[in-house]
Image (cartoon, rainbow, N blue to C red):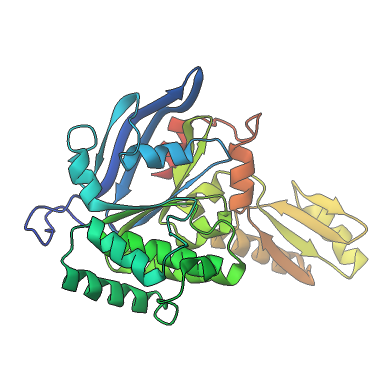
Length: 339
């Protein structure tokens, strides 16, 4: 995926293109005595996919609503597409597109009519609106269904139409709030491909999701939101390295070889029934080479060697547990390590 665009690149209107599509400092939001966002900081490079993970009620949708000008923050500052959220909300709205958890598609009219209505809302001329509509319907493989009522569309088709409507205004930043919720696996993978194509075209995507595989597949950077705070942020691989539990599993068929290896190796967990040993490991090439060299020098031959590393599920459960499971689990601590 494209890396962050350097400062100095220009928009089509000639203005400087910000290196950060979204930046936020100390965002806060409460409803009554419930704090939803408690000092959230964000820095999202232009032309990247940023995924915000978190359990239900963590504040993901609230963050999207604030950054897309739908609601006001109680405190903090933010810039979106180079515009101050508080001072220039109209400029922010002109630069973004938003697709919420629930489709904005009107099921009583056709897909084409939904698109043309959106073109009217963006004040496109009649000819321009029809041109953009035709292009986007083709791009999202909706031409054959364009004249049919949107209520007859499948879930995946409605989601594609929803994003196509979002793109009518040619946004530079798109907020996708759980865009694949309720979709079958094939439709979800199709949506992933659409998101990848958007980013390859220079669009920045801010994605909220509860599907950890989705974040792993798509996101350049991931943040985990819990109890109103960013619990950790980094690439998928950086986040996985925060979690202990990686190990190498050696399995033997020869009981003598198994006993020899179990006696010689330190910090090893034994499974006598399966003739398997578990050694703590971060799975790096250096550690594996050292282990293989030791086995060769000791004349011990394992019949099977497998590497097990924590995945995003492990990260998510550890960071959002009621009792923290990661030593030093402070937001600042993780941010520093992830950068």
